[in-house]
Image (cartoon, rainbow, N blue to C red; front, side, top):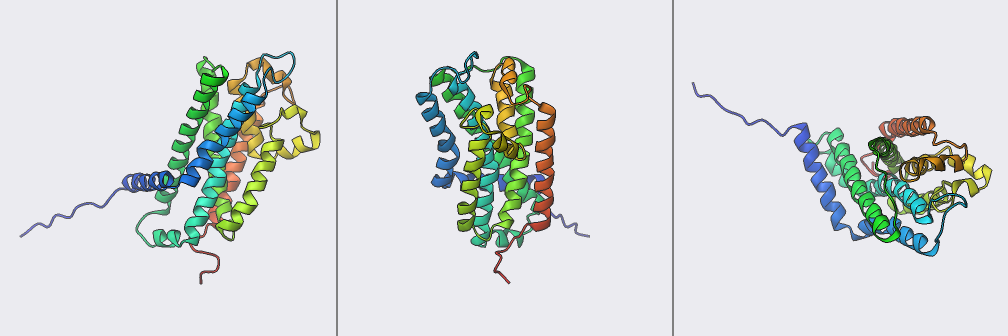
Length: 274
């Protein structure tokens, strides 16, 4: 009797990794996307760090550059995990790329894992560049205690998770990519201005602070300030505390909301595709 040997198919991990390589290749080929992701926060970091010298609040040792770097890291995570991801998926849907992917043996979980891994890698590179520029040109000081870097890790992971699930969810709520850009850009800019990214949070009108507290960006920015600013700066925050517990709760809540909406509404085809 002749024994027929059949080779095993690719594993889920192999498929997810292959999808990650595709996502990275597409990202590096898109000059516009790379400029938006890497240059946008860097340009604002250089502009505000150069134009505004001295300390951000009288009586503290925190410089404007130090304060802005924390905000730029937070907004970079939102831009990469939410806005860029939502528009990228919408563009793929408009071009019927999602429809073709859905027709292959690639598991949906492997596709989304590749997306998430790409967001994580790009965010790490983006943050590394921002920190390098801050240290090299604006004398930004970095934390030395492992516990502080531990705070950075969980804020980064929760913030990226919430941003990514929301980006996937919103991608299906947009009719098309062109409309999505017109809708999402003003929303993100508004949140940046009221969330302590461009201005000191406590100097923003109280009613705008209450609006910002509902959304992840405010908590991401505050979380990064708790990492890169001296611990005694918490007394200059709105509630004189870093509020790590509330921060984690809000980011987890948005992750769950984004995941729920994404599972319920995600579309592989265009809205007008029968």
